[in-house]
Image (spheres, rainbow, N blue to C red):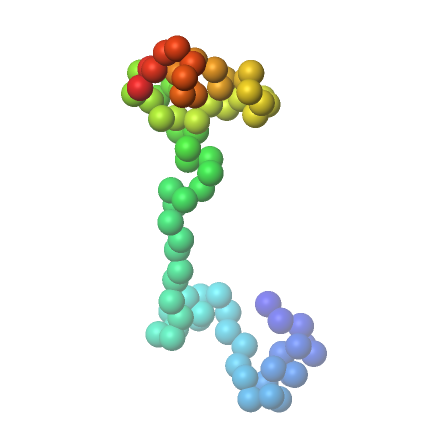
Length: 82
């Protein structure tokens, strides 16, 4: 959707105004899609964080030392769940 003034300026400069369906069907357009699993939110998906052999990141309220970061999540803390 172009305004009349914008359309006139584009066409005066030698360009052309395409609608979205014309743009999608154009042979010179390419659809770019990035990696879906690169999001940080994907690290929270999967089995529960406390389950053995689970590498799922917990949805903790805070990121401090005392919040879901104790035994089984850090080295030298007495228990290795993994």
